[in-house]
Structures are given as structure tokens and as C-alpha cells.
Length: 221
Image (cartoon, rainbow, N blue to C red):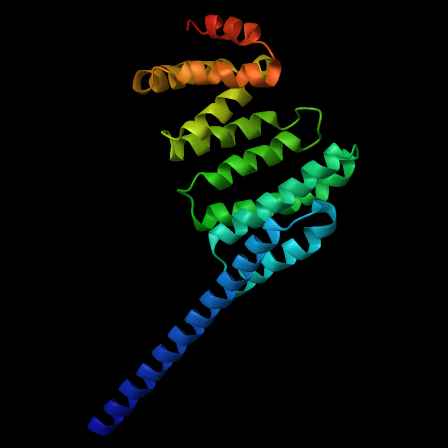
């Protein structure tokens, strides 16, 4: 009986070691593909031409080691490709890339539901669906709020999300405007210069801030 027990322990030890070895190899191959992608991004000349190779590297990464970060980057890359089609003037060709971006980002969220970047990128996907019509803008704003909920102190994220909300002012529901007011009040309490930064961002993009001032007054700010 003692010999049998020793053999069982030995076999289990071998299995554990093999599993650890396989895991280590998968980890190495996954990150190796990801680093290759990062290096290739630095030398990119044309997203349209380089996209297949970039996507292949990330797909290899998630194949070897399905890390949420890799899926997030894959979703972001496909989103950029969709945006390029829209900028080329052929938005109908963006749908396939948007679908694939959404799929990758949802997988990233399932793997790491507490991280905000995938929610922010997924919001962009819904803003671009059926562009230029704001067909899924509501869903996009919902994901914006989810991103904020996960990282409420991130100034970059807050500035961009609030910019989106004010840009879609006519589409906002009353509860969204209430949320907008509360968000600005909370951010201004911790950073008195936040509202000025938001106005500067608006001015940089629209060359004026009159519309934003009117919308802020409508919120009682």
C-alpha cells in the first residue's frame, strides 16, 4: 500500500510539473506574440496594409495565452480598422470590423470585468455602428458610464466621456443629464480646474465654447 501511495504521489507531481511547464510555455509564446505586435505597431506605415499582420500577431497571442489585455488590444486594433474605413468614405465596410472588435472586447470584459479600457473601447464601437446615424448611441453612453464606474478618478477618461455626453446633448435622457451634473460636481470638488480643462478640450475641437456654456447653465453649473 505504501508503494502504491508513493507511486500516486510521484505521478501527481509529474502531472503538476507538466501542467506548470505547459503554462509557462503558453505564457511565453503569448507575450512573445504580443511584444512582436507592439514592435510592429511602432513601424506601421499603413493601417490598411499592415492590419493583417498586426491582427495575426494578436490572434497568435490570444491563442497561446488568452489574456484579457490581448483581447482588448485586438478589439482596439479592429476598431481602428473600422474607423479607417469610415474615414475612407465607405462606412458600410466597417461593420465586419466593428462586429469583430465587439466580440474581442466582450471577451476581454468577461476575463477582467473590473478594468475600464475595454468598456471605453466598446462604447466607441456602438458609436460607430451605422455611422453617421446615432443608432446605438444610447448603448455607447451606457458603456461610457460603466467605464467611469470602474475608474472614477481617471481624468483622461472623465474628460473624454463628458465631452461625448455634451456632444450628444440632444440625445440625452433626463437621468443622463442628472448623472452629468453630479459627475461634474464631484470632479470639480476634488479638482477645481477640471471644468476649465473640459472647456479647453471643447474649444480645441469646436473653436468655441459658447454651446458648452449654454449646456452647463442648463445643468445649473
